[in-house]
Image (tube, rainbow over all chains, first blue to last red; front, side, top):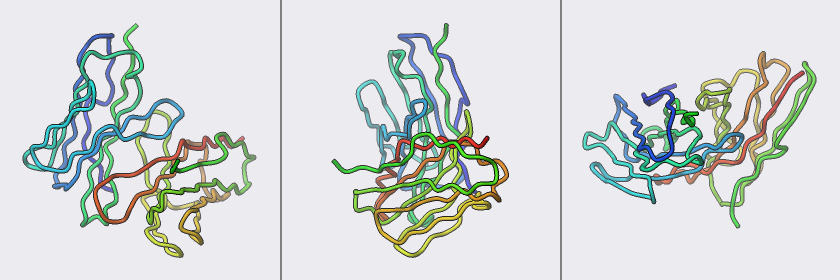
Length: 112
Length: 113
């Protein structure tokens, strides 16, 4: 099935650092979503974006819906240890029956 | 509180046995989904259902079966035909129209010994 190109695949963070990840696609989407999965749990929705160019914040998280509707990025500012986990981007469009198309995930680990 | 419940959290089964994973939601969502996740990997769609008594195969349906007799419930059976069933299984639900994404359950970790 179709997947989004999510990068980086994994990264190490040091407390206080800013983190960036992004997702790209060859198809356009009507909605972009970002999820976080803690170890052994299900993904939880962090941010949903509904309009091209939209920039939305949720605490230390900021996400943008790309102008072309084919990409999105997520920034985490001043990272803390509980930010570790897997971050998934997802795109949604009516033509796909509203089923989500997921990226492969970005694994955030703490630098020791 | 509305939500989606998967049970059990951990499941151990012997090779060759069928096993059924439960997924129940009280969000009044029409659509439900099953995903498989292997360690450090992304989500792969097994089956989905957008309406009661109807379901569709996802990308990796072989060795799995589902039923959707009630709107609230979408159980997944991992059959003995599934070659490598040990994995983390996630259930999700959503409305059919509208871009609000999915609500996920907390997952079931299946280990086949």
